[in-house]
Image (cartoon, rainbow, N blue to C red; front, side, top):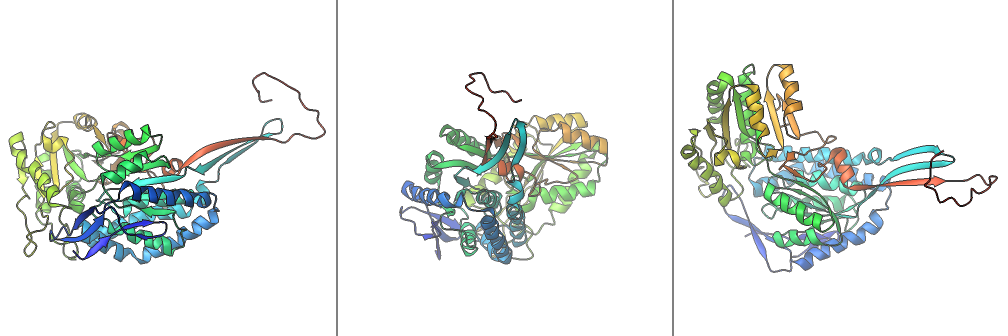
Length: 500
């Protein structure tokens, strides 16, 4: 064990005092390389207190001050892309190029936050009544919390904190304890950029830390990304404690392939979207719905491409896919493949026996492809979160659409077709928050918002974009009247005020 990861509170590293530690492994070797502090309730309270004190001045700081710091942070983040990506690869396992892509997408939200001045301009209506003006403004909510998952240890926090602090809030991040190092590197860069102490804090930890943040009386809002059961718990618990909540849950993203589609393009997209980052993405395509007679040909094309994917350590430039995050998760993913044949699927590719020479103790699993999967099978119903692609068959567009809409998840979806009319119907009729037309992973750009429907989102607002600004601010309407001194007072009037 060569490294210890602590908390970041009040602008500096704070050593863990609880005595509880969690192991962090290198997924490629299976070796424990780091230990991470697991915060006690008292340590969480210390972080929230630092954020609450900082809010007293940061919440009223000028937009010029906030944006100048964010511009400096953006430059530092850009200069440290490789360093952050290396931390991600070492603890998550994804290949370096994928980790760099994660940082790049996070930078998009920092770009948006740098332009926060236009998002917070407010509105003014003059002379709504005699000498009466009405202004609508947005103000920060206070101390806000981000609880983020292991699969994007840099990008998902950057979906949250840049907009939150740009809007004048202070922030407490609780990252995943499985890959915590990127969060501290980001905290150091924010401090180097000149962010005042206490505006951004990091509490490492597990359920103890999460539960305290959800109930803490000084926390005003909670953002979460993770599985659906936990998202539901976060939303229910934080809401019951009077907090504003956005909780993004799990997914079972479908790709509908119509008979007129370019099957080579569809196969390329299916392999890229299903197996990228070893399937550990909430926007991964995990179910392909082949319509009509194209199923057999499409499955063959997917298999041919999947068999050529190079699996290996994330720091090897030749690797296209790395290991899974933990041994336990690897075994759980494998169990879905093992049980697929018993539940009626054709196992076209079975990656469960895969290993890498010289890295036999790593959390390896190969690419699995399941065809003719039934909608009542475990592999279809559950979010596997690994490199397992299910193929289902439908006779018509309508049947395929109904299958997708019957899913309890509604995060992202895609259609592959050359028919503009069918594509237009799909984007209007499908029940999902993000839709791709010949785009397999329709993650919105930073100035639009990310979020799903149904069991993929708990709360009213999505993350980043306009929804993010609304989530991290609250509206206030100010009505003013400056009477003319030469006019007499109107006197007492108990009637309801009317504009005239």
